[in-house]
Length: 386
Image (cartoon, rainbow, N blue to C red):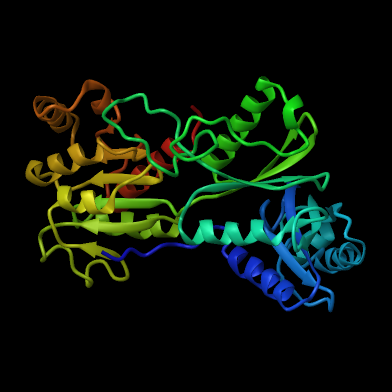
């Protein structure tokens, strides 16, 4: 079963890193610039990258154009000296308007060499492994100490689940270490044996939060500032029921960056004419969910109003670490649904994960409004506090 995937916010990252490695493999010296953090308005988020070779050729962007020239000049100095640099740029209101910003801002950029091995930049091996992890959809966090010391590429593994019915899912934003193990997370070399358990726990928590938010950020560690860059697989939405509400929900979810799959055994409903460009699975929902294997970056929503289709899908979904499981229907319908599922052996704790009636309470009436409410509740479940 083929699924469409969407590009992440830093959609050009693979191309930038691949070009940097290609230049290095061809014997050219290369520097890599990364947006470490931003203040106010900024056209490029933290984690955005720009690669530069010794001939001043470049690929990627750190600002949309307003500071690229200065960053390239600094990158050439890094190539010449091998010494990493932290740069800070203030964007004036006048310049900001020219690059499409409503107001000025400030950007911090970290520039380092791409090194054959360790010492004096980011090793080629780390970048190669980063590309492999992204290709294989393995969630990782790249740790870059901003004092130029050793990098780490750490896997993101799940915390122990509270519900014994829910298995671990690789890719759950959680603590870091070897997947499936209880080892403590690795930390940058400079921390070494002197790092306290409290500091290790703080770093592990920061890694988990960065992965959960899908957002690069700088944290203050005992040895200095560290840039955390999460690289996580695309979010997915599995919609059970190719009904009217599914049409705007699929479109809006795709715009929000989710890879959407629509499941329905009824061929008359699940058609390309009704869902152009969407991934359609014509089959029984519980069987389809077993094949799709929802993980902690997957939402599942049932929309059919038919217990023969919705209930098996919900039972299957609640046995997975899906971050959101919701079902359409009235409060009365949902109460009856919970009773049926409980009678079918679903635990009270699992039932408490079930969102129903689905969607935030915004007074939605039309299918597009209902789709907005569902997508909003999904975002709150994923990004909200707690």
